[in-house]
Length: 373
Ligand SMILES: Cc1ncc(COP(=O)(O)O)c(C=O)c1O
Image 1 (tube, rainbow, N blue to C red):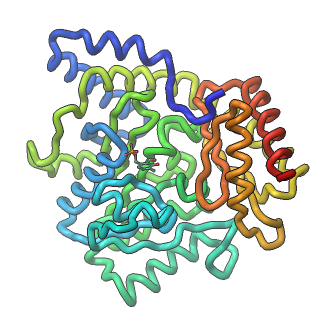
Image 2 (image 1 turned 180 degrees about the vertical axis):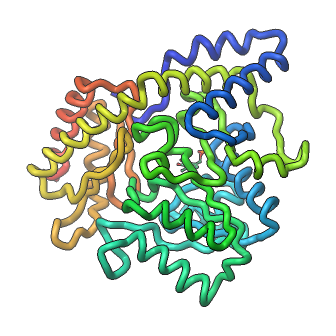
């Protein structure tokens, strides 16, 4: 069972048909219009998209747009964030220092901690509010003038950094902070979007709207498509030709994305919510039997299981994480890590309860083997 895959096989026949079209341009336009219509339906009213090929390129577009419309040059990103590996996005990527090693990146980006309720960095109960206070009363007062900040770029649920779900109120607080200072809010939904968390976009769990959103990964069911979606009033400030690329919005990828969005809207977001809740329950059961599992967290089918050396210290146990993933691989279960010692589960959105049961059997066997080493 491939547990880390975005492929929805149903999307492929339609995508294949699209590439045979002779009237490429007309077809491309029709698909793009269909796409925009879909985005309008799925809660992105009044938004307009710019097409590209990947997540990192979507982030580059979002940053460029934010600088262009705000006339400001600085940005705020988050420690643990992952946004890609090209020069602009890399300046925000801060989940492992190897990503930046030997490569000085775009200046003007200041990182702040992402709220972590399991391993709090700040005093007090509300880690989300603590981070907001840190930005407002620390960073803006002593280091970065708020009036020079073009945008704050954040993953609504942090992916590579450890599948961290922010406390309720954090994204709404960020929205208010941005409004107060005329800063644009960019949500990078490249990993958390497109049905993954049980809703089309993760930010819908908290009813918070960004000014700009980036999408890719699951959007094309494995075909390369990325999107910058922004409020029309923002996107339309770009003059014609200011931002474009050769393959953006090509009919093949648009066809795959349209079918994907339709399937997710009709059944797979709901499946992610239902099967994700079951998966999380099963993992919590496993946690009750295995001390090494410190926390199980997530939303929908974006689930993390953090492994610790002991539950009192909550120290990350990288060795256990690596060994569990290796043992699981030898049993036919493909897993990935994130953060320092979190096993991430992001199966295809059509995964069934029976397949989760099969995965759980393989996972527990791998866990037992790893603990015996
Ligand atoms: C949140 C987020 N943004 C951006 C990216 C970069 O996407 P890509 O690999 O398509 O460039 C990733 C990739 O993992 C991601 O998780």
